[in-house]
Length: 123
Image: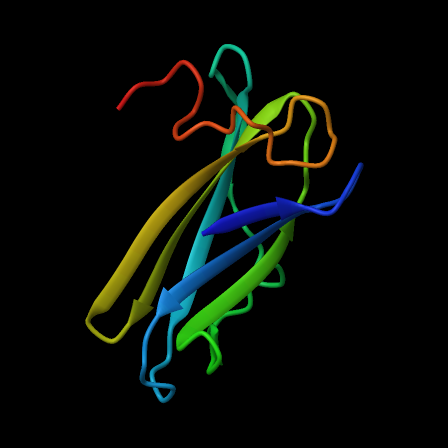
C-alpha cells in the first residue's frame, strides 16, 4: 500500500496493489480508516469503513504491473495519524495489510517521521 499527497490541502492518494498474474481473477476489497492523535497515539473518533466509491471493488487488473490495483482519495487531516486497513479476497485467497500516514502540517508528504504504527501504541 502506498500513500502520497500532491500538495497543501490535497487528498492522501492511497493505492493498494495485489500482485497476481491471472487477469481473470476477481479481487474484492473492504477497507477501514481510523484516525489517531499524532502526538499521543490516542484514537480520534471511531474506525469507519472506507466507501466503496473511494476504493473500487472489484479491483482492476493492471497488466503493466501484473497486479490488481485500487486507488482512493482519503482526506488528509493535519495533526492526525491516519490508518487505512484492508482485506482483499479472491476465491480462497486473502490479502490483508494496513498502513499509517502522519501529516503534522497539512503540507506535502509523507512526513519524514511517517510511523510504522500508530504513535504511542506498540505491537
